[in-house]
Length: 485
Image (cartoon, rainbow, N blue to C red; front, top):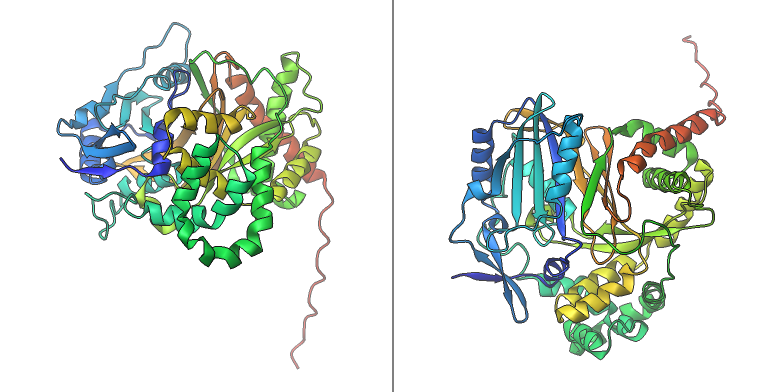
């Protein structure tokens, strides 16, 4: 039986499953008209299954995990037809949210490939496809590339790819070491004590100390910043206590809203002199703060920390699947009620993260955690997660509507998984000229996330109104017209 070593980082994500949090990406694609089951099955067979990861199961080993071809693979086990069960008085959307919430806490079968699609054939005049994919298979950027490859007109797996070879497991060690671990190792080991000498020893081993002398000049130039960023990661202060942080029940609730026009968001960001992300994150912060006020909790002066993935993958390598992203700790000023002031506070905090080594350091630490024992990995994760309230992701999707088996994808919703005792996940997905917000919460921390989601659009409208009230930029004088002689 052919086995392929799982990369260290993917192993780390595999082992992050817990009784209250599954490391599983959950999403919903809404199509119109409905997707024919037979056509979808054929498309998955022809364009999804050539990706080896979707035919392979995971086998745990003493020093990690491996990908192994599933000899008992059955596509019908992974493409499931469903009918929504609607309680009296419940809308189709509420029934779909309830089913997605239930599936978000239902483990994937570990004896088979860790993915499953659930086709709801009658939904709002079309159909809905609920996706569940374990994070060890791919990150958000890779999954968007996967969607494009299986869509109508998609090329599928690139011709130069070798379907039966690991996507990047063979060069994982070199890539991880050359791009991340070796340049950072000396400074990181000295700056962070993240679980005792075993972790430090693992990092030194991955870094190949015999080659560190060749990196001396580079370390000398960047060492000060590395030490600063490493210390910032290790010495993160606790974020503010709110009802969104605490013990988890292990049951999930999902919510989403209608997309906000992307062009309008860009116009507001330009008017305020901020990035598009600054505007979106400020809307999230204001919506959370407003919700807490409504719950009788004063958020004034409070900030919560969200771990935000930062892509480290070249676009041309997105088809390779796997995980290649770092994590950046972003502070959301939920206590600033003034929407414009909140935007500028977010811009300042995001500016402090620019040119930071923190995402690379976080990636290196994930690689280390995949090489050590599970208890040490949990201790390493707790270093950050106990100081974190939320996980937040921002995934850029296709700019134009895509079609699958003749049906148009009208809406794409994705929920980011959480780990440890983090029970609050925010997803921002851009697709076909719109920006889609999704929220997944643990029922013990926020039993009705729709009440937060419903505040996103009003918060953005406040910013839009204030942007429209700003003075117009002076027009440039028209160039003199030369008369023909």
